[in-house]
Image (cartoon, rainbow, N blue to C red; front, side, top):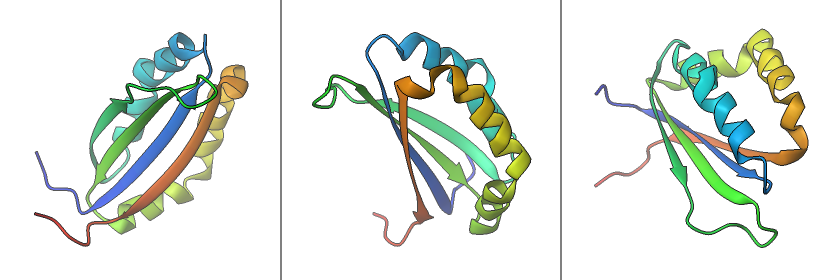
Length: 108
């Protein structure tokens, strides 16, 4: 596995009853399409064992990326993000998303 120097962490919460629909979208092509972007190396999806206080299930995806430049190019791709926004419309009320990105500044 190639070493990532930059990371995108996408935390998301799914409303009760919405998990199957959201996971179908993620596994049915969304995650693979993000990975096809230049510099994206791998993705790991996590699921929390505990829902949030409102009962929504908590998840995260961690994308390993070659460089900040590759991430910046991905973020600047307005056409791709418009496509993703359109795909999320059917379950927009069942999904909350928060993103964090950055470089490794310490490692053991």
